Image (tube, rainbow over all chains, first blue to last red):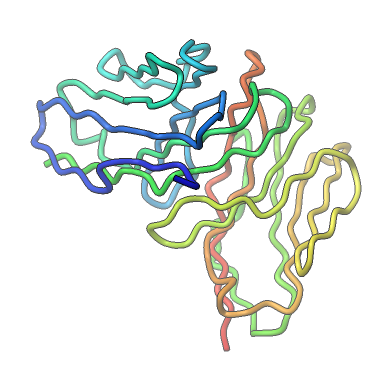
Length: 116
Length: 113
């Protein structure tokens, strides 16, 4: 597709369940980012991949959060034993080349996660 | 102090007026700055990027950067109701030089017909 695609668009889970969120970046984009956006706030960085390598996971809030990009394209963000505070919109973004060079990031529409 | 600060608004302007959105940041080493527009329930959409001191114009949008004073602004001329959205200011940051973005909380703009 032409843009960054995320699925599902909406996810409702019960507290304690595991969830998996998928991101399909723009074809050929080297860099992939995950952000978490709480209601009324700006996105907050979670983790960064350059191809298949996870180079920065400093924003992951706990060890319940895990991300992977095994073949350097599609990425999955997994949250284990979900808590109510995990409720947010999870945004994926990609950029053409390696990060740190002022390259614009292109965002997907996000997955809205609600934990009951 | 937040790394990137914006007034959450709402900022309300009449149609046809100039909307001025401001952003300050705390890290003097920041080099790259971005303005994103986000409609409710949609993804952030890049409007402008700016890397050098001064003004950068693109159509009805002008971004201004002043590194000495550590602020970035976005001017929207001839505001239209379709400009009503949340505007996110972001800087490229992080010691690991990954290109991750650090966002402000966003300013809600309302353009009234």
